[in-house]
Image (cartoon, rainbow, N blue to C red; front, side, top):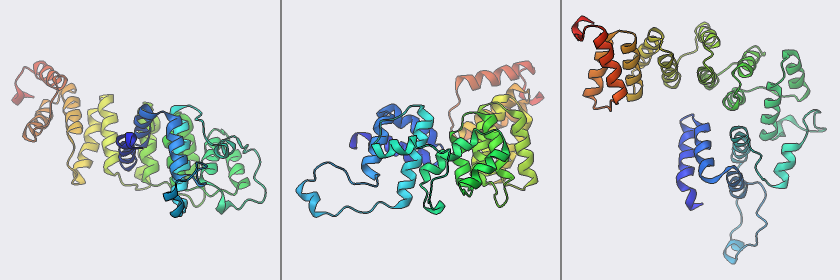
Length: 306
């Protein structure tokens, strides 16, 4: 475990920053998916290890594993399977849980006692169903109550933006359910990575109608999406909203805005942000310098005339 101390720290930090899939990739690159699952099962599994105990261990009674930690481990293992697209070698109990069919509702099973692992697997299967009525039927049959944390997780591990958008829209119309900011942030991220600007515009309009506030994570992602698209007007809109939250934009955001203004021929705004980066001693790469100089050249190389 000591050799994986750095990777564990990266995984923990990535989870706190809302980039869990990045942490998984870093961790799996260093240890491999099978090793990760083995570690989780050994360190946090519900059943004690079959390995013989040394004398010191016999005197120390094993502590009970909190249910919230067990649930997190189950969700983590499922996320690893979805992200690295591999089937890790796990314990027999976990393997049986993975391969247990969900076509029929378990007999005499209390919905409140159902494992989080099974619920998340079932939600992934429901996400693949195209008919909304069939989804409702499945939810009713398994007596599932949809929660925003579950929807946010499904959106994070889903790679198909069309399926994710359909699942997101279906969930929003269920009685008694409402998306939280994590759901909106994950949906924005997926649509941006898929360059699905039509659905993204619909999502932003829906957020305005529902009066859903934009947090710093959403705004940074939206700025990144529209600067990569080259839409200076949209990027500026969310950049101004970010500054209105009294949040100081980071160097990446400022440089991205400077470049998109330069490409759009808005030299005055580009030079303003260039000056801000100099004052804050932010790193300015050669690409950013070239984009700015090219924009100034197109406008007569006189910043005051831009």
